[in-house]
Structures are given as C-alpha cells and as structure tokens.
Length: 245
Image (cartoon, rainbow, N blue to C red; front, side, top):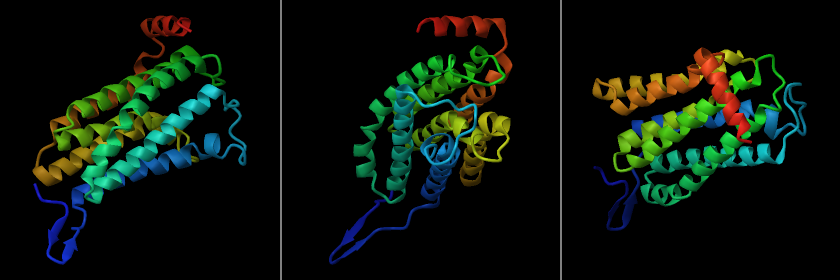
C-alpha cells in the first residue's frame, strides 16, 4: 500500500488524490448536492420559500430527523474528502462519531415514518406509502452495518457506504424541482450501483462482490415498495407497525 505522505529531509510531499479517491468523492458530492437542492424548498429554506401544499408544518420529530440526516450527509462528505486528501488518520478518528448518528437515524427515521402515516396528504394510502421509508431505513441500516463489519476491507467498506447512503437519498432526488417523482425517488438512487460496477469493471475487469450484492439490496429497497405496498401482507404489517405507536 502506498504511503500517503512521504517525508524526506527538508521536504514534505503530499501526492495528488488517486482516480478512485476522486471518483468516490464525486459520488459523495452528488449526494450532498441532491440533499441541498431536494430539501432546500421543502425543509431548509421553507421559512423563505413556500413549500408545496402537501408539505405540512414540521414537528419537533421532523426537525430531529432533519438534524440527524443533515449531520450524516455532512459527515459522509467530509469523510470521503479526508480519504481523498490522504488523511486516513483523521478519517478513522472522525468515523467513531458516525455510529451513534446512524443508530439514531435508524430509530428516529423509523419513528418519523410511522408518525408520517397520520400526516400524509397524498392520494396514495398512507399505510401503502409507509413501505417506502421503512424499506429505506432497513436498507440503509443493513448496508451501513455491513460496511462497518468490513472496515478492514477498504474496497468493500467504501462501496457499501455509498450504497447505504443511496438507500436514503431517494427522498432528496424525488424532491428536486422538475424531477419526475417516481424517477427520482425509486429509480435514480440505483445509478450509484451502475456507477460503482462500471468503475469496478473499468479498473479490474470485474465488479466487486460488494457492489453487486449491495446493489441488489439497494434495488430491492428502492423499487420493492412498488410491488408490495398494496398487497394484503404489507398492509397488515403496516397496520401492526403503526399500531405500536
């Protein structure tokens, strides 16, 4: 493994980021931009720009969810930038703050999704729509915990981190002005699987197993709701979950 910072007498040289580091930083940057643009009108700037009519006033729970999600996307962007800059030491230290944020996101995200059933103002049955955030939370949690388990395998770790973030990014893509909602919320997140596999093949002539398996899970949690949300089995599950409140 090449040394990130080479020190010679009287001279310190910091090599330029590799192509792969720049690639993963670019992926993180697109996610960061999607969150800022997608949630700009509906959350971050709603005090200055009137949100769409179906967006109800934010509750303390919504603000908590927004705070955790915002903290995570900023941390994700910073972490990829640190790796690109060759500062793996800071990356590892700062990564310790990620676990409590993610665990809190899973708990608060689930709670917010269940509470949303009573707040939705869309034509679709709220219990059907519950499949979307619930599968997103499950996919995010499984991919992140898998990435954490593979911390000592950087190639798999960073691919699963990207796919885990993609599992949660559909809500941002679906809110981008001018973006067809179904395209943004359900299909567009899977472009990160395509990008990872294309990069793998270009670099090693074959995709990493983490890109393929993680991508399949991402496909299930993003597109899967379309196939299950009106089924009797899901509606019964959704009623039970909502009843826990």
